[in-house]
Length: 190
Image 1: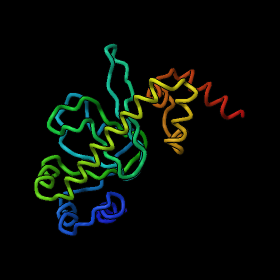
Image 2: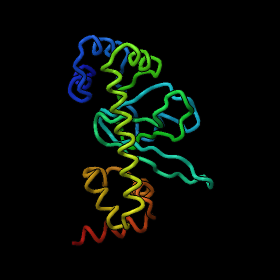
Image 3: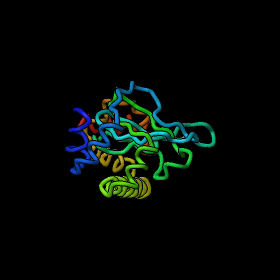
C-alpha cells in the first residue's frame, strides 16, 4: 500500500490539500522485529500509524520486569506512547514482527493540526481510540477471570496468537505464561 492510498482508504482523509501536504511529510518505513520505535523516558519525535504488523507498548515495573501495556495489530491505529506528544514517553513501543509504519515528525503533525481542521479530526480520533482502548483494557483486567481474558484476546486479536511470543500476550492479559499455555492447550483440545 502506498502513502496516498493509506491516507485516503485507511485514515479516511478526504481533503486533497491535506493529503498533498502529508505526502510531502510522511514516509512508510519497514521496521524489523524487535526494534523500538519509542523508548520510555525519551522525547517522542514522530507520530506513527500501523500500516501492517504487530507492535506492543510496554513499561518496566519497579523490579525491571517488562509489562505489556498494549498490543496494536490493526492497520491505521496509532502507535503512541501517550496523547501528549511534548512529554517524555511513559512507555516504550516495540515492533513484534516485521512491520510497516507510516511516520510523520511530531513538528510536522503539530503544524498540520494548526492549519487543517481535518488533521485535528485525526488527532481527535487518536484521543478517542486511546481512551476507549485503555478503558476496555481496565474492564477486561479487573472484571474478567483468566479464561474470559484469554477469550477476549482471541476475539479482539484473532490472528495474533501464533505470531508473537506468548510471554507478551500473557503479560498483556495479566497472567503467567504457564496459565496462558494451559488455556491455549485446553482450548486446542476442545
